Image 1: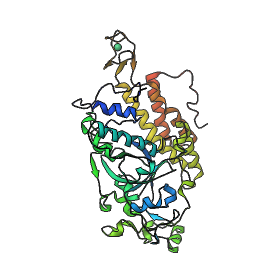
Image 2: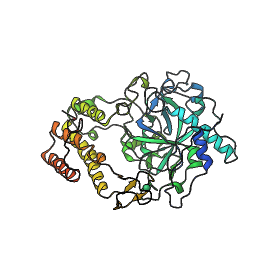
Image 3: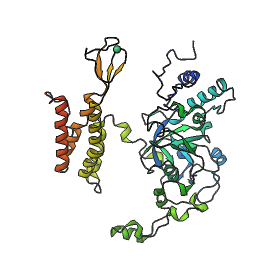
Image 4: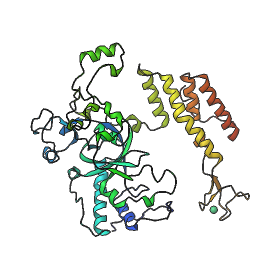
Length: 433
Ligand SMILES: [Zn+2]
């Protein structure tokens, strides 16, 4: 029996400027360890971002002895750490990674175990070095470093793994999320194992296109997080242990937040307290007992996700559902439909048999190399897929006449391209009946 899989997949070609491939053994070892690779040569794990400033050892499954080694010697009341129920303040570059049993995503610890085994074998067999990780249990992952990276950003931030939770999200300090240049809550980010990035990342692999060489890649690395240098939205973070009565009175009177003086992170910048001593107002017993996986991951189709969002919008008094419908149509659907319609008119054509691409379809109506069938590269389906839901949302939630007419004009343009549909597809136009 072989230790390598029978089939090892590769890519059809390289899209970087000098067509530099990576060392072929890397691909073989990745296949052996069942590791996926990104276009820049690294392996990534995607997750939603959640901010947190405090945790209990029992919430992250890390033994007390291990936490002490990492610097968590005392709890928030300055008592020595002895029990897994004590509350600890999170250090700003420590992260708690997702390992949820209720999510369709593979737990991060399982991916990391395989990744570390891959890195170790790679170090030994390709680089002639000693293995670096040599893990025997999942617990051995604690204390190792990762790079956090947000979409469309070329600066990564180093983080240290201190545990895993049953919540399918990356729990990290608000400062760390801000360092990734995101708004802290609910956005998506990814991590790359630090040694993986150091060994396998190369700018040379990135496609030679504008954008591809600067976005979504760890071109710059922040090793030490400085609160003065991160996105300043986080400087407005409240750091008090409780809100005064005046705060609630002011809320009743709909006063502006800045009318009530509350201590915020910005007043602590450039002092030791910029990193520690932050408060919170309400405790929970165990954060794994709440929602552990976003419905957005669990709902299978676009239609169900959208319906879920609209049901919430209808139920929450503070939310104007007509405005939500308008935003979904304007920010997502219209852009998508118009973008794909534009691409359709500028698209290439492709031979199904030999994959040859054509700027224009050959006049003979078949591939001039092999005689194969010529097809579109942008399908009609990708253009019309959001038209039905848009029209349906617009009518049910009664958006402005202007937006409704914009959609009707777009529908006319699409029918001008493809003709009117004789038979209505199931569900189309009747999403929100
Ligand atoms: Zn062909």
